[in-house]
Amino acid sequence: MSSHGSSDEKHAISHSVEKVPASPEVTLTSAGKAKKPKKEKVVHNAELYAAIQEANINPYSKESFKLYFSVLIAFCCACANGYDGSLMTSIIAMKPYQAVFPVGDTGPTVSAIFSLYTVGAMVGAPFAAVLSDRYGRRVGMFCGGVVINIGMIVISTAMTTPQFIVGRFILGLGIAVMTVAAPAYAIEIAPPHWRGRFAGFYNCGWFGGAIPAAIVTFGTNYMGNNWSWRVPLILQSAACILVMGAVWFLDESPRFLMANGREEEAIAFLVKYHGNNDPNSALVRLEVEEMREGIKLDGIDKVWWDYRPLFLTHNGRWRMAQVLMISIFGQFSGNGLGYFNTTIFRKLGVTEVPQQLGYNILNQGISAIGALSAVTLTDKMPRRKVLIIGTTLCSFALAANSGLSAVIANQEAERGEGNFDLNYGKGALASYFLFNVIFSFTYTPLQGVIPTEALETTMRAKGLAASGFIVNAVSFINQFATPIALGNIGYKYIFVFVGWDLFEALMWYLFCVESQGRTLEQLNWVYDQPNPVKASLKVDKVVLADDGTVLDTTARGVATNADRVDAI
Image: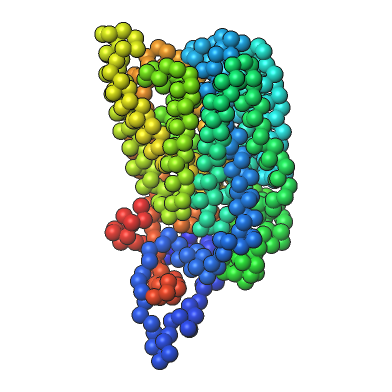
C-alpha cells in the first residue's frame, strides 16, 4: 500500500509504520562521505522489503523449525485429500474390487462412486468455515480428521455399492473441514517473505498423499483378495491420525487471535516467530499495525451466514474473482483426467493392471517434482506471469496428446481394437506426462497461495469455504462427466481442454491481480483501487549499499514500462 506513492495509500498504512533508518555505519565512510549505493532494486513494497532485511529471520532457529513443523501438520491435511485423488483410480482397476462391486471403469455408477466424495465436500464447506472462524484453525483441522476416520470405517467395511457410496460422501465432508482450516493456518502463520513457500508446500501435500496411495495400491494389488482394496482404504486415516495428535501442540494463528480480541497472544506469536524474539522488530511493528487496521473485531467471520462482502463490494468482488479463477481453472484445465489415469493408460495400449498402476506411480512422481520445483521459487516468481505462460503450455501439451490419440483411434478403426503403432502410444503417454508436469508446476503451489492471499483475515475462512464449494462442484463435473465422456467419445474429450486452457490464459492476463511481494494487509489497498490489476503491477525502488543493506526506501512511485515488465 504505502509503497506506491499514493496519498490515499500513505494515509491508509504509512502513518502507522516507522521507516527503518539507514545506520550511519552503512551510509558513511570513515571520512564522513556517503557511500556510493550499489544499485536500485525494484520491489512491490519498500517498507516491507526494508523490514524483512532488518528482521533477518534465522531459518535454522528453534522457532523456525517449530513453524516448519506447524506447516507440516497442515501439509498432512492436504495429504489426506491427495490420497483419495490417487486411490480410486487404482482401486477401480483391481479384479477383487470388481468382483465385489462389478461396476466397470466407465459409466454412471463409476461416476457416482467418484463424485459423491465431492458432493460431501460441497455440503461440508459452509460448516467448515463456521468451525474455523469460531473455534480456530486447529479445531477445524482436528474435527476434519474425526469425520474422515468415520468415513474410513464405513467405506472399508462396505460389501454393497450403496454403503461404499455413503462412505465416499462422509470422507468428502471431512476433507472439506480440513482443507478450509489448514491452508488458512499455513498462510497466516508465515512471515511475509516465506508465505508463498508455506502455502505452496501445503498444497503439495496432494502429492504427499497421491504418491503413497499409488504405491500402496500397486503393492496390495498382488494380495489377490478383498484386502487388496480394503487396506488402502483403511490407510486413508493415517495422515488424519497424525494431524489429530499433533495439532494441539501448535500455536494458534496470530490473525485468528487478533480477529478474536486476543491481541497480546497474537503479538507474542509474531515476536517469537517473525521477530527473532525482538519486540521492537520493524517487521513485527509493521505486521501488528497493519493487522490492527485491517482486521475487524466485528467482521463477517462473526456472522456465520454472511457472505455478502465477498460479492457486494468492489474490493470483495475482485478478491472473489481471484478465488473463482484459481478454483475453477485449477480443477478444469485437463487435470481432472488424472482421476481416471488407469482408464487413459488402457486406451493408450497399457492393458495389464500392474503396468497401469506402475505408470500411475510414475505420473504422480514426476508431477510432484514439477510442483516441488515451483514451491522453491514461489516467493520469487510473479504469480501472474507463471499462470499465463503455464496455462498456455498446458494447452499445447494436451493438443499433442489429443492429436496423437486421434492417430491411434484411426489406426484402431482400420486394423481393429488394440492394433496401432506403439510409437504413437508412447508419444501420447509422454505428452500426457508432460502436461501433468507443467500443470503441477503452474497450479499446484498457487492453488494454495492465490485464494489465501486474495482473502483478508475476517473473510478468509468463508472465502476458502466458497472456494472449496466451487472446487468440488467442478470436481463433481469432472468425476461424473469424465468416465461417461471417455466411454462415449474417447480422446475427443481432451480437445475440450485444449481450447479451454487458451481461454483460461486470456482470463489470467486480463484479470489476475499480482500478490507477490506484499503483506496480506497491504493487498487491501490494491483491491480498493479502480483497476486492481494495474495497481498490483506498480512497484517501488529501494536503494541498496554494496553489502545489500537498504539505504533508502523513499525512491518510490509508478514504475517505468521496463520496470513494470519485470514486475509482471
